[in-house]
Length: 126
Image 1 (cartoon, one colour):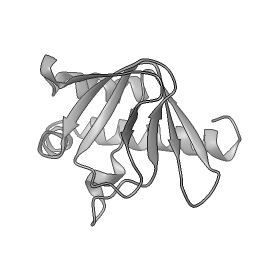
Image 2: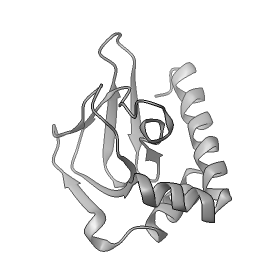
Image 3: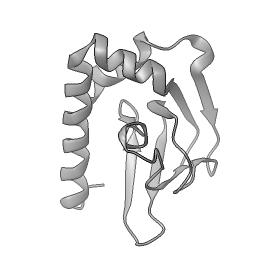
Image 4: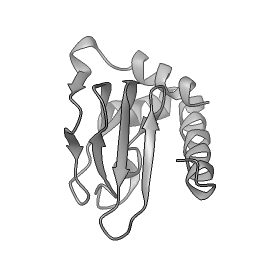
């Protein structure tokens, strides 16, 4: 289901929205204001929480960062670090809200992707 969300992100972004990271680069830090959603085209991103040892690995084909776009304070809940060279699509808040409004299946795909990630974290398969 995450590939459906990534395809929607691709449809609502332009080529200038592609961002490259090198291994070890930090995409964002816990507590930062979040104004973008990310679709991971290549590589692996690790999400790390400062208040605990919880980590999660995001692999190519997945979309992440939506929580900061929909919560009241728009703050990041973790630090995102590239574990290897990565290529990402960035979707700003306005484009994200437009995508949700125009393609409700995008919202469903995001929810399904979040559920999938939650199950992986709970099951230790992060």
